Amino acid sequence: MSCTIIIGSGAAAYECAKAMVEENYEGEIHVFSDTNRAPYNPMLTTYYAVGKLNFSGMFPYGEGEEVWSKLGVIFHPNTPVTKLDAINKTVTTHNNTYSYDNCVIATGATPIVPPFPGHNSKKLFTVRTVEDAEKLFQASKDKPKRVIVVGASMVGIKVVELFDKVGSQVCLVDLAPRIFPLAAHPECSKEIEARLAKMGIKLRFGSKLTSIEDTKDGVRVHFEEENNTEDGDIIILCIGVRANIGFVDKTQVETEQGILINNNMQTNVPSLYAVGDVAQGFEVITGKKRIIGLWASARMQGRCAGQNIAGGNATYEGNIMHNITHFMNMDFVGLGEVSNYTHMEVNKTDDKLEMLFWDNDKLIGANYLDNFLDSGVLHTALVADIVKRLNEQDIVFGNEHTRRLYELLEKK
Image (cartoon, rainbow, N blue to C red; front, side, top):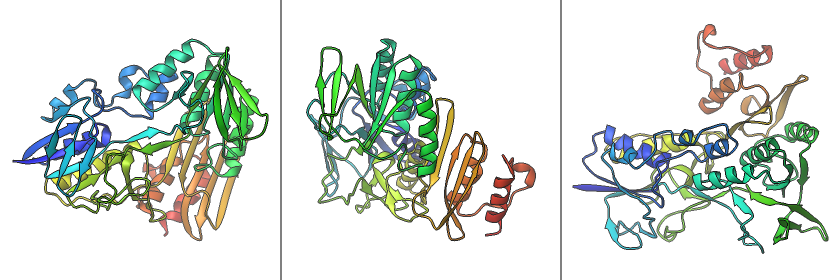
């Protein structure tokens, strides 16, 4: 009997196992996890922490180990894999070594915490896991007077919202010169920053954190600038994540920021697949390989790998970078490429901002501020590179600007 081992237990792992079962895979499926929790959405942990989601809402497939037993999967909770030998097809845990026919790496990512002095302070928090969310939720109930959030990211802004809501004085810090540096055009960033400043959020960009010092009242954050500090009761780091690939032998498996894969989710070793936040696959606009840490991408990658292991010939052509978030009475959408473009179009009203980015006649990116309605049209166009002809009644346009955009795309 054949055996497939899935390392990791997030959405990508679950969808992989589910697809294998649906395709009548004949063999054992083992899932090794460093936790006993059911698959959860890391991006929803911030929504739980801010009180916009109940605890069970973080678990789209249900709670408990029965999520796996219902699939007929052999689940190994609290059993992290410490070594993968892709050539001899074995994985090793703390206690045993297991052989496989096919293996799927779906170990996700871990928050980045640089080893600066004070990085192990008990007053320092990260945001990724359910445990992180529970700690952050409890910290907000204590209503700290001053909070320092490091990282002007989608996660960071939700943390800002959480503590602003409970009355804390919040300082948002980033080494980058502006908010959402990868997802937002400078003009869009400027508009968001102006709104945050009016709400009383202190913004501190271009500041490099060098150390954290525990004080009687909380923490003191030191920056590269001489004699320049920021005091707070607690500090939360939201500066990104790193793929969990420490157990992978990089002399066997090709890696960069993550594990390099093709459109079948295979690595350079045909019996080894990678999916989710460890997988570095194609970004459809640039054609370059990059990690796209999105829930939808993780699910599709997982299903693609599962179908192929079960004997299919599935492909996943990739996705585009896109960020959609609601925070502090603002809706932000960032799609595709917003930095390298030949020209842009801007449509600004009193309460909305729309920016479209073009590479000659090809739409490659967009920023929307407070206009979710039209973002779906653009996302479809960017992923497919062309909008399929639809009946006019099937599409609702927010304004004539987007109607004209649709007509342009339809003629491509």
